[in-house]
Amino acid sequence: MAVVVINQPVLPQVQLHDRPYLIGYWLGYAGERENRRLRDLPIHLLTHIHIFLFEIHFNPSIALVTNYLTSESNERWQEILSDVHEIRHRYPIKFIASILDNSYLMKFGIEMTDKQLDEWCYTVYRKVVIEWQLDGIDLDFESTNQFDYDMNTQNYN
Image (cartoon, rainbow, N blue to C red; front, side, top):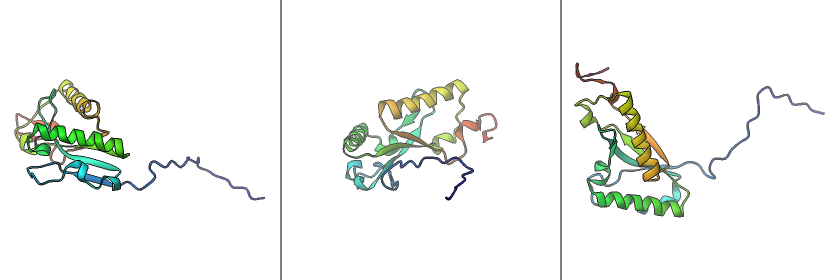
């Protein structure tokens, strides 16, 4: 008789997906009329799509803008949302909103109180998850943290 002693708890193996994750980054229209529509991508190969990119807005009640993603076209934004919902009904795919710190706007400095930051975060959540029904949020703040900008010295802390 063999006795096996396990010193660590055994965790159940959970298969999160029946295939490896394959994540696509879709750049929207980004100033290019000839860019592919979201629904024209090889969706059947992907598990996730990052819709890239949403820009932050300094007004906490607005929080996000889609100017880059749509080349400033509201009709294109409605088309993107329509494609997301159409794809979701056909494939088990997750859509993530990739939010970039708009470095051009950030150089002018934005200060937010804790209350304003809370409102900004809630507005992002409300728009992305509740209104647009996307599955997640990717905060892609690559430049200096705009929430840590000192208006008096005009420097990032």
